[in-house]
Image (tube, rainbow, N blue to C red; front, side, top):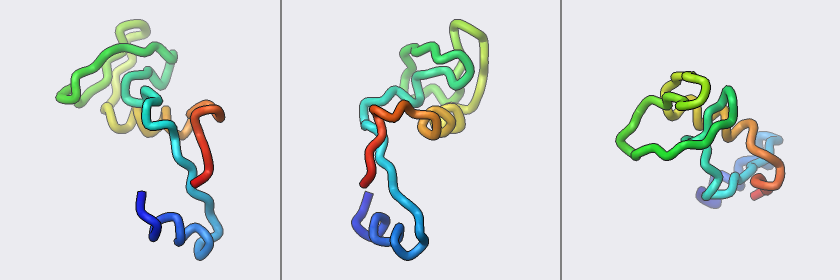
Length: 75
């Protein structure tokens, strides 16, 4: 995150929110919430509990947008 990214929020009338860097967004199933270990080389998330399968980055993006409030703060 760079200062210029935060500076732009006033221009566009938005806010920047930061999610805790240790929040396991890519290791958590966006459907059932199950957390499992994954290697960085794994590009598809395959849930061991509910069998949900999704591209890892898409799964992480959903989890970040739904992150618990205690894991989010304003920049």
